[in-house]
Image 1 (cartoon, rainbow over the protein chains, first blue to last red):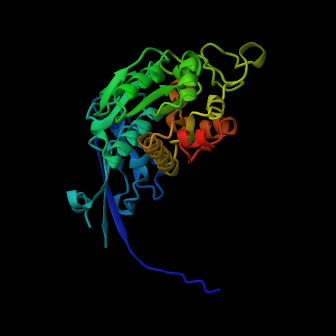
Image 2: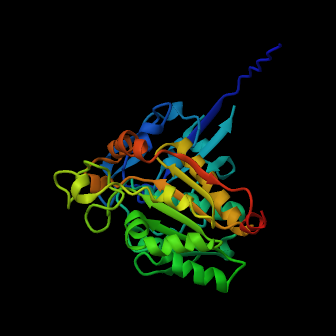
Image 3: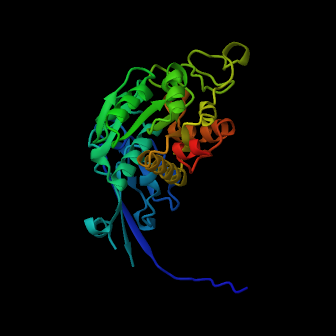
Amino acid sequence: MKIVIKSFIMALKGAIAVNTERCKGCGVCVVQCPTGVIALNKNVNTKGYNYLYMANPVACTGCTNCATVCPDACITVYRVKI
Amino acid sequence: MDVNDIIQPENKVYGKTPVLTDTEMHYCPGCSHGVVHKIIAEVIEDMGIQDKTIGISPVGCAVFAYNYLHIDWQQAAHGRAPAAATAVKRLYPDKYVFTYQGDGDLASIGTAEIMHACNRGENIVVIFINNAIYGMTGGQMAPTTLIGQVTATTPYGRVVELNGYPLRITELLAQLSGVCYVTRQAVHTPAAVRKAKKSIQKAFENSGQRKGLSFVEIVGTCNSGWKLSPVEANQWMVENMFPHYPLGDIKNEELGIKDWLKQ
């Protein structure tokens, strides 16, 4: 039996845009981020919630995990191949 | 590459679907209702049935669901959403009709309506959010509350001798012949959200093919009612809710009701 392992190197780079006024700072996305990109800001929005921001933007791969679990649909994900 | 170079319209891979309105949801931070609204909206967008879908909103936290999805809605009396959905579906047989109900609505006051809608095999979709508590009224005990769970009306935990056993209504409804698809899902991780989305899509497709009633239970959290943070509530759900409410398909009838009757 022949096992073929296809290995390819493809770098993905991503970024998120957060609708900070819609964000309620629940933090369910923060624990789902596999690369530890996102965190809750020390500053608050007009409702008093600590909104989401990219604390470590270079590590983002644009995997869409954070946007998938976001209950308020306030995250937009962008991704490029390099 | 700078973040601002990546954030360009041509690089967008995921964002808010236009079926969801711009109204900010009134739900507590981290509530499962928001995720379920979002995946229903995405399914409606993917199937291209926005102008053919009619939702029936319940009494409970999701009573304002009509503010959040750009589709036609009808609000029903407490627990009577399946009866209203029956009427809508029979008057407009080519529309996709779904009800969106919580556990206090469906498993308590609305048990008779859901039982008979399931038994009649109406071609509707029922989305059932089970968070084991009455969320809107302040966290009282629901029929689905777990044994030993502390709520506003069971401050020392639910006791079997006094309050009975947690109601597994999804397994109960799976016994009825009019139901073609029964599943239990959750929305606490990205993988679970994607599975739940597939289930809801299958339920809507069954409705279009007139196979019978499709029932999708979503085990959700109520972090305000459970007195936990959103992340802790998700962990509590995995540790305590899933042993009693195991995830997965309970019934998946490939045959339609009419085919089943011929056998």
